[in-house]
Image (cartoon, rainbow, N blue to C red):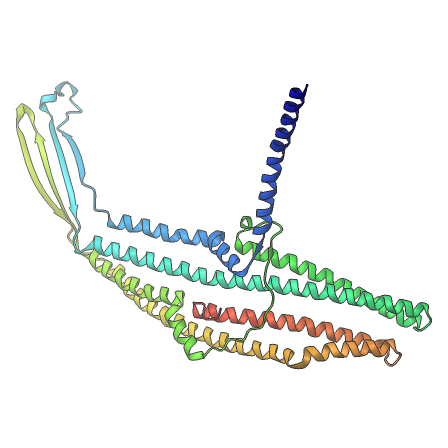
Length: 428
């Protein structure tokens, strides 16, 4: 009996352990998913650069261009020809295998003018332009992701502000309800206070919607399937001062901007295309050899050379077009350089202005708005202020806090705008 109970107990324990293993594994997977659903700014940039569908499609342009390099480096194929001659179709009774002429021909075209080397050079130039264009797309994606991430932080901060305001106002409303019951507050004033709560409720609903939309926009940039449905971001709105010099930013931008580098490579591509056009002007030679078998066992071998006589077509049109393309590429390069310097100036002064605005709030306006609200509420509870004074102070406080958060988000975005126009992370 003891043996039976002992084995029965062992089976029950083993069964419970086996049943709990899938639950533990599922719990670990869920914990990992929850841990990965919280992403930082660095995580967002890393995910976007890896999984953004648009960028991944653009990177394939580099692979296509490298495949074109293979095509450009290929030599012409030899041509094998077969000929059966002197077939008396109109006298079929005279057809004999011994009376026909059989000819085997092998020909090969020799490219002249350095065409193949010049084709390879142009193909590599195209690959270089494609790679730098992708780098520029990565630069723009970095800014878009950072901007969207800051928008999520702003939406979360605004939602927290709206919820805090709603909670504080609800407490004030409860206190004034007690004053109404005690006869210390007129019913008309309490109704005005109660109606004002609708604005706080609307603020919370609007902030919740803004947060959902901001997270959806960020998720689109990251790659929709790369993050969890319930993902969240870590971080907060922070005002950091960034001492930068305009001259240094301009030098760094001229050295690092991928679109300007792509314009430089475009000029080289245009010049190499002119060289290829002149190379195509030179006519190729086609060498051939043949073996002929005639009737009665007469055999013969021949050698031939053929080439085009360039009386009319000497590739004049393509040479002229490519020469004009060089001028166009040079104008594009100059225009891009001017655009880079203009972007730097705009971003630099945009950053300075946004920092000045944030400093205004932090220099006293935030404290004044808080003091005004608290003083009006305190005075109203003691009968020294009207209900209109309380509502006006509350509106000013909410507007000031909201404007401050927007100003900090604008300053953070302006700092990232500087990184965008310079082409490297000059501001961390």
